[in-house]
Amino acid sequence: MSILVTGGAGYIGSHMVWALLDRGEDIVVVDNLSTGFRWAVPDSVPFVEGDFGDEPLMDELIETHKVTAIIHFAAKIVVPESVSDPLGYYLNNTSKARNLIACAVRRGVKHFIFSSTAAVYGEPKRTPVHEDDPTQPINPYGRSKLMVEQMLADTAHAHDLRYVALRYFNVAGADPKGRTGQSTPNATHLIKVAVQAALGHRKGMDVFGTDYPTPDGSCVRDYIHVSDLVAAHADALRYLRQGGQPLTCNVGYARGYSVFDVIEVVKRVSGVNFPVKISARRAGDPAIIVADNERAREQLGWIWQHDDLETIVRQALEWEQRLHNRQTALI
Ligand code: UDP
Image (cartoon, rainbow, N blue to C red):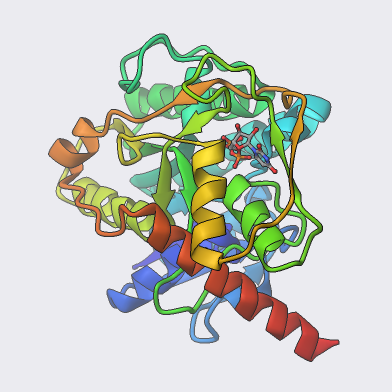
């Protein structure tokens, strides 16, 4: 009996793999290493370099490793890139997910945990946003994920498959034990970019839009520590194993920080006053998105431990420095 983790060499997936190992679970990882790293997966974990949308490969893997649950992380996740390359997003995030779900049904895998996103809400009508609020994504990334939620709901209705779709808010930080972190070289996410600016790994950074209807004009997001997000997956797995019915849950802390708030914390924690330029809005960005997390607390029993932006930033800084040292040592 093992758990198939797609994208297990990536940022969130590698944290999940460590957490599952810590719990003594059997795991198999599939990752095409497009953005992940082989070194991010511990040597003791079976690793297959390949495509999660490759049905014969997934069929074989599910059989060989007696897979009973799939945690599906592998995806393209950059909102502006989804605007310029929608078909790439629909292929990777939607069509290939359909293949993986088909393999799960065919091979009798009954538990499926899906990495969805707050981007399914688009521009929410209220804040914090609740799972039953309208889903009207404003970018192809959000639509590519929403379609998978819909596929899962229809599949669970027709077949013996139960799932939890977790709608991630803004994931940041790194493993408190320093084993893994956000390692993508050209990552575009705010905390990663700000931390790189603080360490002098980039010249400075831009604030994309200061004319949003928010207190300081910059966008507001709900930043959640990656270890707390991973804990929600472990809770979802327990929930499904105990017979839980299909469920869609927000995973965020229910409080928002603006882009300027985040930059201020990164400057304070790092002690570096790096250059910040005000720039035009970025395509596809909603103004405010903050989670209502009652359902995850009540249905999954989710409890978080790292709800502190300073801690998130400190660990992101430590990881970025470690990553830089590692890359310098390899040159
Ligand atoms: N952002 C920014 N400068 C950057 C990166 C991001 O101003 O270098 C803003 C971005 O426009 C958005 C917020 O930070 O308002 C969070 O963006 P991110 O890419 O981290 O996550 P998203 O919310 O798009 O998933």
